[in-house]
Length: 335
Image 1 (tube, one colour):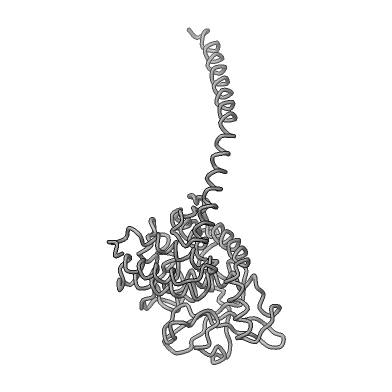
Image 2 (cartoon, rainbow, N blue to C red):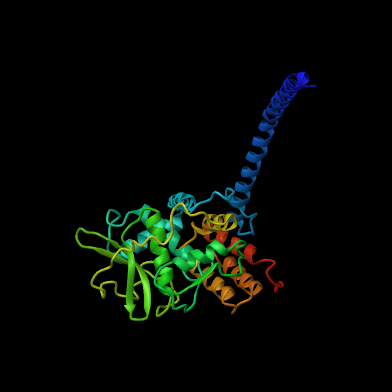
């Protein structure tokens, strides 16, 4: 029997070779159909989003490119940076930028538009009640973002009516500064306008002198309409704003796939909307996250606010449509 073993092994090798060739030919034959189906799906999603923006109807949610177990912090930052660059084409984002320049007495050279678009996206996403669903609460933790990242690492299924992380003002401000730096914008540090409160500040060198832009990651001690560039706090009260350089998270750190997909998809849905529209949605979202407002109530109020918008406010109407759709099914319908 030993003399038959080499011949049997050769035969098995030939069968395995033919099987591999067969599978390769089959995959090649199926590939065009798969690519065509993927292209059709993407085209359909784009068309649905465009229609929703024009009509204000609840769109079919756009799905971000799939995040997998290999999604790192650096991967997410790169995707978000690209989304921020795309948001520069939004008339609403451009209008907010020009309004900030006028309010601060600055030129576009002093405050570059690409940097503003990146920091604005992060602000609207990561502020208390922003579209990444972070919520403020007193925690008495150290002024860094370690606990936020730990909560995110433990999160497996983000939900539109639940907070993804809970943190205090100094933690949220450190988190914002960390993300800004990871995306390539430096000079973001922490300001203590009072002994018991912290916000972020974006500092830009002169000429003619240093510029300081207040970034209120919460609205504590401020009015409901305070936003990016608020004058509610004097950034010059603190002699020096030290850039936040602590490495709170490694760029190579992996994130849960569902979380990574949520962060990217939320930016895709809301980044083009106006600051005023996002502020109104933030108030509704904050009420839901804190349990003061039911999801169905929030959806009803959002629907009324959307219906009052002019048809020309396409980005805001689309953002409202996404919010209403997200809240749908989270409680009993009221209207």
